[in-house]
Length: 111
Image (cartoon, rainbow, N blue to C red; front, side):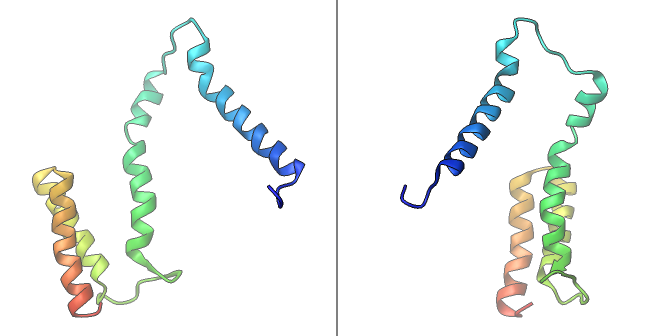
C-alpha cells in the first residue's frame, strides 16, 4: 500500500458500498418485486444485444477501420457460425462450425 493514498481507498470503499446497497434492495424489501410486462419482454433481448455489441465490431472492423476486403477469415467464420446456429439452434455447434472455417482460413491462408 505504498502507492495507495487515502483518496483512492475512500473511492474504492464508496463504490463498494454503493454497489452493495444497490444490489441488496431486492433482498431488503419484504414486498415482492415484479417488473412490468414491457420490461420483462425487453430483458429477453438483452443477452443477444450484449453479444452482438461485443462480437459484431470484432468481425467487421480491423484496427479501428471497417474491413474493406472479403479476404478476412472472421467474416466467413461468422457467416458459417450464423448458418450453423440457424440450422441446429445449438451454441456448441455454432462455435465449432465457425472455428472450423475460421482457423484454416486464418492459419493456412493468412487471412
